[in-house]
Image 1: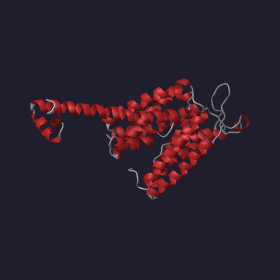
Image 2 (image 1 turned 45 degrees about the horizontal axis):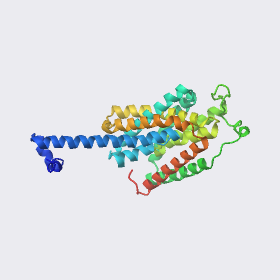
Image 3 (image 1 turned 135 degrees about the vertical axis):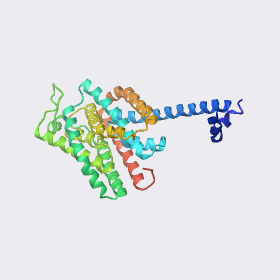
Length: 304
């Protein structure tokens, strides 16, 4: 019987399996079931990487998920992009809900940034249509390398300097003090994140996280939770449209999402105990990694 097993998984035996001939039917079904199980576990493992990235940085899930789905799970780009968007949106929504429960999401700031960003996205898409794709990706890669270097070099300012930031937290309440300067900084953050999301297809987290770190004295975990809330808000409408159009490949999306959410829940607590300087450097490493990926795509050395 052992000598018959290899033949049962050959493509030529699939025809025999369809005709209902005993042993080959059983062997072929067992082989397909084992293959499907391995595929589900592999999708969940890749999803766990995205959950870990979102737990540690609050950004970067979408742009990393797409190449994992394309190169790792052989999804076409038309299905990989909306599937990645849905999964990142789900994990971001989970993080935002947990953050709201803890009181660390600045939800009014998230609504303002997300609302402005959603309005500006079409402008970025319109500009992108007029620019050569390779030049656009190469230029954005250089910009992100600079951003990563700035984040790596950043050090926590002393208390006197942070008092002059546009957005300052009320000491006893933990909420932002809303001033015209703070509102302008948040609107600018939404405009820049929305513009670059439309321009280069890069999630707003890459702009939101460093902008909140620069313009506010929010603790790092508050910044990450607020960034996740914005990502969840912005991705909600696009995900709904993708589901309505039937663009989500559920056999991959479900285990990928399960792995992402499980990984996020597992790592979220320990990550919140890490020092801000370390988390900023992890974010800087992620930004540089994504910039290198975009540069390789611009040069044609990495599949889009």
